[in-house]
Length: 214
Image 1 (tube, rainbow, N blue to C red):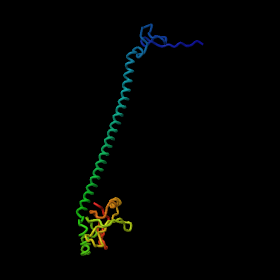
Image 2 (tube, rainbow, N blue to C red; image 1 turned 180 degrees about the horizontal axis):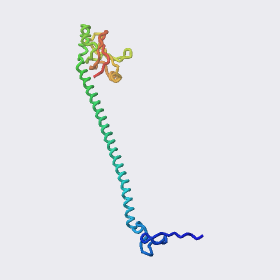
Image 3 (cartoon, rainbow, N blue to C red; image 1 turned 90 degrees about the vertical axis):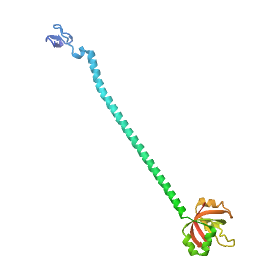
Image 4 (cartoon, helix red, strand yellow; image 1 turned 180 degrees about the vertical axis):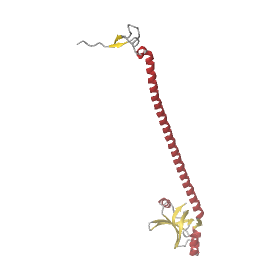
């Protein structure tokens, strides 16, 4: 069976042409399409199209990158602000603690009663009721000479002289703090010391608790 030959018609004169014909033999009209006839122009158009769509993609990437950078800067700024606020808050708390501690120390200094061991014992020996009103349950700063150092019922104490060489009694000062007890261990009879303690009254000896050496 003979294969049927394909034909086409001239775009200008309408004459039959072979499908492979590029130019009409009758009128000389170029039968190729626009893009094949103008390859250079076609190439330029293709490049422009690629450039347009490619440029949009790059702009989107740039916009995305810019947005991400802005978000990161915002997060960094927020973090920095938060850290600064936390630092400020911490500094404020520390300052308040220091001021509170200073106030407590000042109040303590104002309330402390300064007296030597001889006078303290003399006041109690003369009138215990009056002495209790003046000293009992109050913070006292006492200066005196050490006459005895020891432990009673598990409590470390130091006795101060009443000023009477023949007296059987003294100012008995008890220590609870380990650091203070270490300091007591370095004392000797005859040393003159100053300490703070809370007076609890007289029971043969005048007793001070929670003492701290100065």
